[in-house]
Length: 316
Image (cartoon, rainbow, N blue to C red; front, side, top):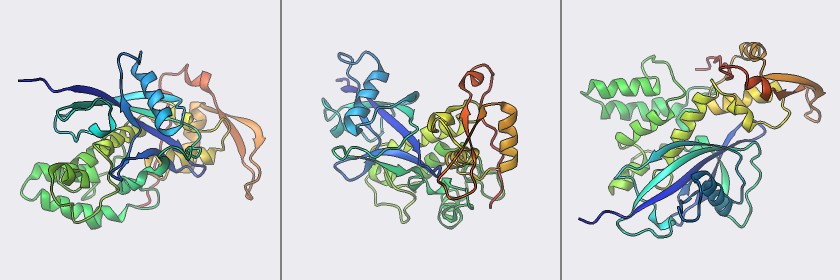
């Protein structure tokens, strides 16, 4: 039996925040019309490291130079939909293994018009994840009834649905992005599941679909970022050099999809000593001037858990 042709691809979950703290994702457009993450092959003959290869492909496909980057996970399931058309050297029996990366940039500048790339609100792919103003109606109106039908007579499935989506009074855990998406996929409720199985699309649209398994890779990136800001100061990789405390809070809220308790957030921030005032004031906003702060990078590197406390404010 002939071994399948093995190709290694690199995918980038590239995140930036707009001025209002809205998290955006850089996507490209496939010939099929589907959104996709920047994605390209690793060439062991010409690329010394995965990291350098990733930076080169992002530059080539989007015109962007990425800054902070970390590896997420290797996606190599045998039945993952192979994006062979995007990889040079792909063959009909190719098995594509994708190494996912999380990349952060403080400035979502417009993509070069010559590239098929643009910034998109990441919540259009996961509309059930944004709880900043209220619990998204799509959960109780569309997702919960379908999951209950899928789980009928299976207590384990029902418990998974309860815990993942905060049903029947269960607490919403913001880091469970990947768990929620994979549960919807398993239940046949997302378009990618129907596409890969050759079945009709579900009767409800649960977020915008993505090419290949890129929405799963994106969910992995969101899970990592939401968890990591609580024990590492990665949110400051998304902030400008100077920022107000209100802008910092909006940014954290945008990432977590939660509204935070302002007084408790600032109290914890002051105790951690991660920021310091500059004495300069924000101008040109039309409102009351607010002091500008900077991130104390040297101090953060000297403490064991330099993350941000995220005291939530209930809005449900």
